[in-house]
Image (cartoon, rainbow, N blue to C red; front, side):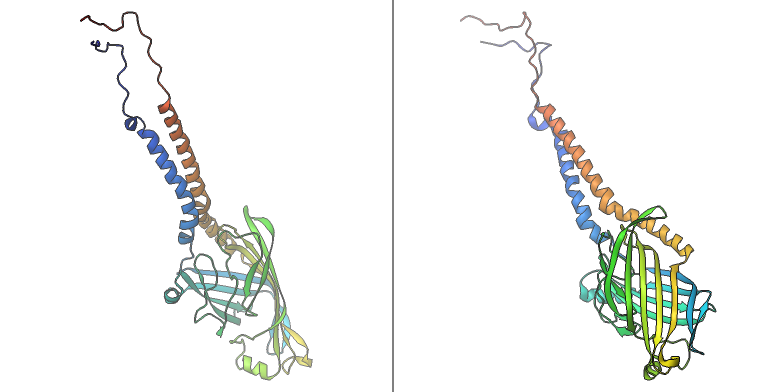
Length: 349
């Protein structure tokens, strides 16, 4: 028996299965890759890439208009048109590298100074600090050199900055005057210059605190004040408007009060206001801080939202395209209709 060769209308043989579906296999592989990349970007890359730079430098000017200041010549409080507080923050790279060798993680060391000046520009008080913390989480890292005004401290909680992706909850916030931490309460979401921010408040009740090591009048030192039996007391209401993405405050205020109480320095042994005022960030520094935070939050959102969700959506789209191609490749082809002239020719013996 012999078969006739295929005619012009006959279908060629089907290609091998491995040659029939290369496009769908590539799409399925890419879908798996981007689906796996999505959580890696959020949970692996973000903690390693979103960090405070160790060399950061920043300054901030706050003002109280008007304010009450103590005249150390007469030991009486007087009202002045304004008091200026200049806060400088400088990253100490050498100290950060030293701490990192024992801490085993990326560390930032900030050397800060709060300089209070009267209306004439003369120093009222200045308090230096060294703040050591984890570059990503902002958790304190305890190491030699951690201090406030030369006094060794062991911080708990945050200071100056909230963590990336700030949550709607209370945090422990370190107070440099009392050298202790206390809750700072989340009080709701606000809109600040078009930006959605979280509003936090902390109230420190009247507490006895150390005098600054550097006093505004020559001859008056913390030792002479203590010998006279006079003590320093402090209370404040602290308010922050915090960008929840970067954890950076875009505005801050304090209703600040200080008193000297008792002893030979205070007339009548009572109390006298050393400083009181509603301290607010100067408007030009609010604007510059807001511009800086707005640019930085885009980078954080790329790592935590835009790229992870984008990769997940791309993976889903590639998966759907790959499955569609696979389904089309598996669909059986219809058999061609036989014409009357086609058939099998057989011969006899």
